[in-house]
Every structure is written in structure tokens, then in C-alpha cells.
Image 1 (cartoon, rainbow, N blue to C red):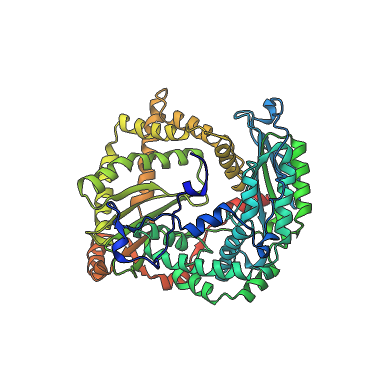
Image 2 (tube, rainbow, N blue to C red):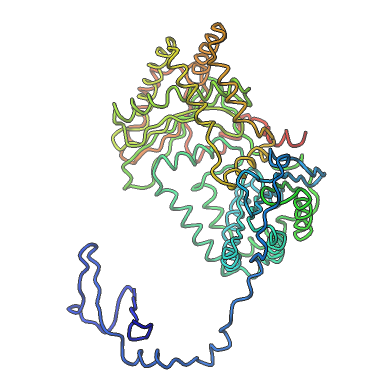
Length: 562
């Protein structure tokens, strides 16, 4: 069968079709979709057999530009065990740090680079308007680079960007011989980005982002709760409905252009290169990229700090949210307990072991036995070095306060059980921690992301998992029975300090409209059996509440300045 117009199969989809009567349509059996089948029109067949180019469009037809990112050389550098052990700081200047590691483990032909620009331009990431501007800027950049990235992907090159860790991150992947050309081309395009030419993209992104902000309230309640928890805990996170949506709706194209004028003008650089390159390559490429996208020097100690609220001992702050969706039948409870800041290795192991100890029992009790809802879990919750844990449950049959009652029942039960924890259970929960830590990177990308995390946290503890494993093995070693029993006692102490003894907590309760009317009665009932002081806030009060709280210092940035 030859490829001719007569053998073509054409699919046309549209809300309505003219020229067909209702009787000509058939109904597809699975989805009930109406369709009609007919031969290709003879006039169209004739045009397809003898195509002619309309002179109006002839000038607009062109061959694509040559793809300059294809590599002609795919050689891999010789093995270098000394450079492949862990990342090394190979350049430490006032305004630029470069970390480097050759990757002999996966023996890749690629270079992978991560680059963060830290700055405070346009009140970056600190004000509601600044965060809205960043969301708009990211999505407009997606459209601006769309065709370029389409070309790059055919050469196995990639470029992406995201807002993270108090800085703006760019990541690149490309074959070695073309990497410098690729990264400089990306930054050249970024330098040439002119917001005045982006009105159409702005209008499209503005409408889409408004829809996204509005659609937040169609998410599952337990998913909404995580966003509310972050908004409550972090110094510069803001409520989407009450603050960010209003700011976005007020954002004009002219204001976007104005904000862009002061954006990404001064910064300090943090780089990490891993893969098929030398240390000299890494320094040369970073310097060339910085020359391509020039910024003024920015002192490290002025970088934006991402700080976590320090909760008050013995206080449970209840964020109560009434679902605006009348069709939503589910409610959810997310309970966060804050514990230790910047813990030792031993504390970290025992913290993880406590969460392992209650993980399966919590699921069995809340999900299997009580059948509160399909989603019912305990979890470890760590925020920028602040250790903690908690529970999240979603239910269509119980109010959030009723769910909290059952969480408290579970914790009361395990307060008694952990007193008599057996050697077997103690070993099991610590060995569970060890098993999680033994996870191996599956590819260069996973390895890059894991090591890059230690760099952006400025801990540089690249053997963190191995050190935790060694500490965990020491805790459950039977060589010294007295030390073993001490480990069990410390585990009990950690459990009590997190969950029982005047804990610090936030409870996020998303109430369906049906359940909301029961809130006050259920709240009062719980209050009688809980010794904690419980304060209720609603989303509109969140910012005022947060402004009165103490904040942990941003240890990540403090370590970097040192």
C-alpha cells in the first residue's frame, strides 16, 4: 500500500459539524461518542494530488536552523578515582563558589551542572507581589524558551529552572564537547529576554496562573493541607486565596515589566559540576557563563533567609479551613509535631527510629482497624534542619476533630507500649532506618540531586547516610548491654518529647461544609481531654499570627557565611 491521498485516514475533531444530519452519526460503544465516517471529498483529493503553494505563505516556509548542539565527539575522559570520590570546592571567591566531581561510577558521557543565583532583587521571595512575579516569570520563560528547548532535546541537551532554597536554580545537561556552547547560548538568550515583547505570553500565563490559583481549592483536602502547613511554618510563604490570588489579579503587564527591570541584576553564584569533565573545565565554563549573564556582586550575608517558625512549647495551633467547594465531601486532618533543631547524628537516628516504630501500627490502627479513610498515615517531617513528625488523614465520614481524637488515642496507647519496648522491636525500628539509608543512586541524575542537596544546605556532609548507618549500628550493638539499654531509654525519651511532653504542634483542619457545622462542638469535646493550650486561627489570620512568632535562624545560610 503506497502513501497516496487516496490511502489517507483523516481524523477531524470539533464541537459541531455542518453539512451532516443527525441520522448520519453513529455512536461509539464504549464512551458514547458520536462520529461519522465518509470518503475524502473529491475536490480535496484533487488539491492533495496537485498541491500548490500559496504565494502569500511561500516566503514563510523554511528549513529549520542547523542544530549546533549535536556533538561530533562522544569520548569519555579516563578514570580519575581521586576526583570521583566526593564533590570538592575548587573555587571559592567572594561572589562565586564552584564545586566539582567527576563521575566514574556511572561513566557518563554527559556533563550535569546545577547553578543557583542568590539575590534579593524585586523583593524576591519575600513579599506576596515578589512571589507572584516569580511564578509569572517562570511560566513566561517556559514559553520564551519553548522552541529552543525543542531543538536542544534532539541533541540530548536539557535546560530547566526553578525557584528553590532562597535562590533561583538553573540545571543543564549536555555532551561534554558541546556543553560550554550550550550553557552560554542558554544564558545569552536569558540576557536578551525583553519583557516588553512578552505581552501576549503575559496575558496567556496570567489567565492560566489565575486558574491554577483558583483550582487549588479543587485539590484533595489532604493535599491542600500540606500547602497550608508550609504557609504557616515558613516565614515568607503566603496563603494562595487571601493574598497571592488577589495580588496576581492586580498584576498588570506594565507592573510586570517594571518589576522585571530590577530583577536578576545583582547576585552571588553557587555551582556544582558532575560528570564527564575536569576541574579546569568546570572553572572555565562557570566563568564563561558568568561573563555571558553578568550581574553585580551581592554579599552572601544579605541573601534571603528561608526561616521556620519556632512553635511554642505546649501549644497546639489549629488552622481551621472551611472548604469553599460545596461538592467536596471529604475533610482532612494534618497534625505536625515540631521537635529538635539541628540535631546530632544520634538524635537524628533515634528520631527516625521513633517514626519507624509507629509507622505500620499507625496505619493498621487508623486505616485498617478504624477505617477512618483511604488516606491515613504517620510520617517524618523535617523542615530545613528542624526535625519533626506527624499524621495526615482524609475522611468523608469523620470531622477533623474526630480524626484528631483517634490520633490522640493511638499516641496514648503507644505511650504505654513504648515503655516496655522489646529488644526485637527496638532492633527492628533502628534496622528500618538503616535499610532506608542504604538506598543507592540509580543514575547520574539521582546522584547529582543528592549531592547537590548537601551543597545547597551548606552542610557538605556527603557521607551523611554512611555516618548515620554507623551511628545506628552502634546504638543496637550488643557488645555493651548498658549502652544498648541506654539507647532504648533515649528512644522512649525522643517519643515523649515529640508527641507527649508539652509538644509543639500545628493542626491543619480542612472541613467540608457539611462537617464545618460540627467543628465547635467537636473542638470543645477534644479540649476537655487535652492538656495543651489550643488556639484557633483561620487563613485570613495566618499572616498576623506568623508575624508574632519567633523564627529559627536559617542555619543553611549561616553555615555558608562562615
